[in-house]
Length: 476
Image (cartoon, rainbow, N blue to C red; front, side, top):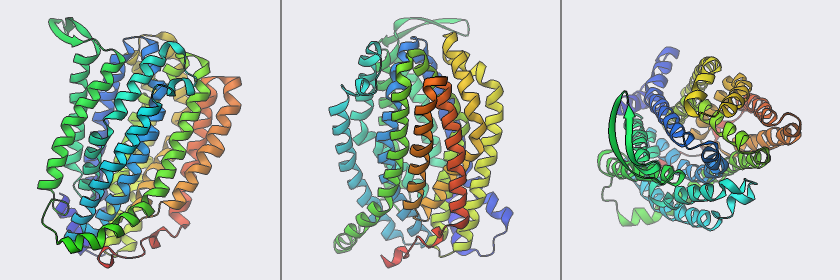
């Protein structure tokens, strides 16, 4: 599929709207299905931890936004290289794509190690900085520590997946990511719970376990990520055209590596700033919510988990939009790139709107599955229903961001995100939480997501993002 679509993008002119829509669906469907599989596994994962009580769920919820901040910066750096690869693939420059991949691999190892070291140094203090209850601080700190110290290795898997997607192959990373979720659940069963007799579908059996509780959830995820990272790396360097390891002239490597790094930083720095703005605001919102107590923190965490079934398909489309726009621009087809950007964005809005309607009615049952605590169930249902009204515009911001990133336009979107999330969400949350509690934070979120979606639609319509690609890969 990857080769066929890449050839169509590169060699065909005058594609009809429906042909482009079909290509967008073919590119995004594997990623969307993988995201939905991921969500199903996250639900089961959350239910495992939820069975340990509200405090266990709250300990993970307390540091989740901080983990998103760390990983968001890493993902932004990944985009700095994968976008360049998509441009080179569109230009059919295989040797340059390979140089970009190698350069990014080395840079990612060093960068991830530095991020992991910083996270290690703050892990014991973080729960208290966030205003968490002392009763959950130890578990929260341990969970954050385990999830971050493995980053130098596990996030290489995400780098390889992003680069494979940039070549047009969405299917292989999707299958491996779905497999990782299944492995996560299996290892969590052994790591979270103590040994004992379990009953499933009326069948009793003995299951050995480490009984690590919240820490076990982190270790289960880490082990699953290690396994899939190894497989993803092998496929990237041995099986994927454009990025597989082949002998490259040493002089050519030295001549281009510093240019690749410079361009990657130019692309990634604004995207990293955007991730810091978004995730930093989530950390601040968590800090605002934390004094409300473990029930509110747990309800907030479960509501975010439940909402992911609506927005994760949007991230699948985001990857497709980035690849399609990047390859089209690499092939010097700007009108085609613009069409793909709009088609993917509209698909994202429609799909997320439909899922939002479905989740509005299903969420009470979802929270009964995730936690036995009735107070958490009720509060989570109330706040999630407030935010679901904004799903179409959230979809617009997610997918449009991917399309703009594929064009190399990262500075303006990062500014728009910063203004929206800090000027609207954090400000409103601070003003509303005192009066409305957790509901106030989610009202602020719904208003901000709508505002941000409108900003990104305006950028897609009126911005000069098609000119962001100043030179073709072959000119670098």
